[in-house]
Length: 346
Image (cartoon, rainbow, N blue to C red; front, side, top):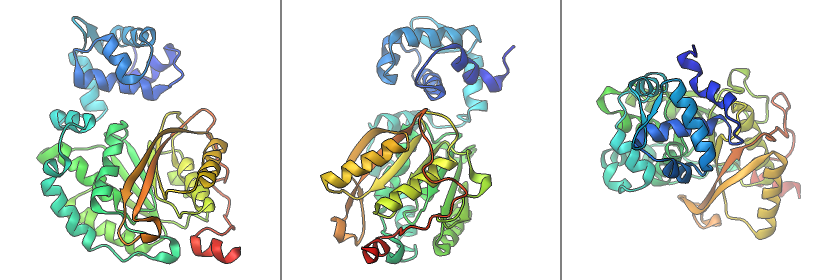
């Protein structure tokens, strides 16, 4: 008999699917939230062919997780698996669905949280321009956190922020508390790596005050990654220095922290650049084996970043079978990294 721990993994072994184990999990979560649901609706939602939907469904039925009626529905065993093993027990399903589908007004839904976030953001340390820090707005930080929910990397996941002067970790933590309400029992973990102790200390204080699942690590990304963080995470956020070297290093360090699974998202914020620069940026993604899943122009709003028009893009990248490190975990990065360094070197 298959252990409860192995359902998704075992089904992925039995069904030949290029999209990998992430698609199997998304199938399960979609049925949990939207059952009864038809093969056609699932195919449209997951962008998978109907024969593949049918094959996955049959495997879930075999192990007693789902059943077929007027549509595909969960069994009590399936509900128990999703809630107790995958960590959805106590989650506000209505709110989760509304946020996932984008049908609610964010400012109204998060009125109480926005009052908290606004106060927190006013108290954060001043940006250090020598290391390319620029503050995004609190609404941008909140909107970034929602991307983890919409990409199925929030609930019961390990999330990494590679640099976090934008306090995305705090927004993620408050989002989890909103979803779980007073019976807050999230299994998610949020980790932050940063060189600036001011932000790490501030995030730690906020985390303790509001009981958020955040762990901070002081780290100079030029140096080797901490071994305890390698191959552990389900996604990462980064808003790196706006140089090609900064892009390269921050992505490499983040990738080294991800699990070796294809389809994991990277939420990558960067300035809008020229066509030639953007072409070189896409080449770098390609060299690192990353797939460009979605480009969101003008997604990010910043305070006091007039040099980039106070706006920036957010690109969702996905790992593939070809994803690899251009900079190894134990390699010290010697090249110029920040904008002022790069300009002085020219």
